[in-house]
Image (cartoon, rainbow, N blue to C red; front, side, top):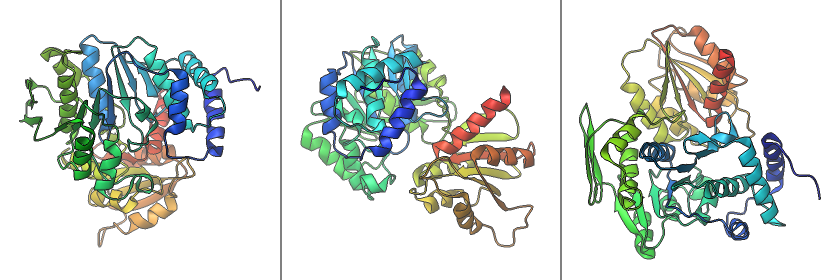
Length: 432
């Protein structure tokens, strides 16, 4: 019997090498079998969140409000930017290496001869860790889709589907109806199922009806309205007025906040939250890489927009920011994404493109991106007003943008998580 790793980096390295050898079989039978052996169950309400975009923001808002209401909260969120530990949060704090190593050992003992992918293994470990942490509520973010995601071996008390758009088409289908059905797979009979997409696919509505879930739709069962200063939420039995805007910036955040408040309304008997706790929780919520505007000049924005829906939202948010002389983009993305669809909303907003190779075999090459971006050049634009350069990694691309941008310009870092993480790591290193 080979020795098991004793450190988190060694565990992650082992799982990476195994992952390369494990064929991804999209069923949940293997994960469910290991879950049974682990006797994995939660003794508290579980909120599960799926969606193409907005799921991280919705999870972060739920965590923040519930923490301010005095509850012990467990959160599983992904992917991470700098440290794997970011994926597991207990009471607002990242899980320690020691706790994660112990959880990995537990899954390894339980799995026996059953092969698990990196994602399945780490998901079971983090859910085990949260289930043993004495939390009052567990918030679980779904990775890909919903129906066949490893998180879905748990039965949620409240399930949320945020937005539904085309992403991961190879796995989930290439229409909103197909994708809506996959995401509705997290709904459960007799339990609250929330959808905050204003155009919920019929497949999702039908699936909820077929299994007897209690479906809450935005515009029908809950809603929001706002002016410049504040906003209000209205649900089936609960109104919340004069709320502060969420600290997360951007056009879609009220949809996400409304979904979070609908979940809290559904759980109001088990997890009551007062008006002031909701206000404070939303006002102080933090989530890196979602239209995150850094302090200082030139203005720098970090956003993990890597599909057309997210890119259109980013473009809208940038358009609301006021005048900047030039906008520099640091951009890198996976090659299986709808790259043209991501670039299209940004075309008129970016003057200088700094394109980066990413540390993943699935990433699009910067040189290939350059060909696509060159086609966005405005007719008759001078080189001083439009440029395209390529770099070996996001850190080099960002350093170039910083060296060229003046204080009235802005830099937008967007695309893959790897792009934003690479810039975050470079900034962290430059501060030390």
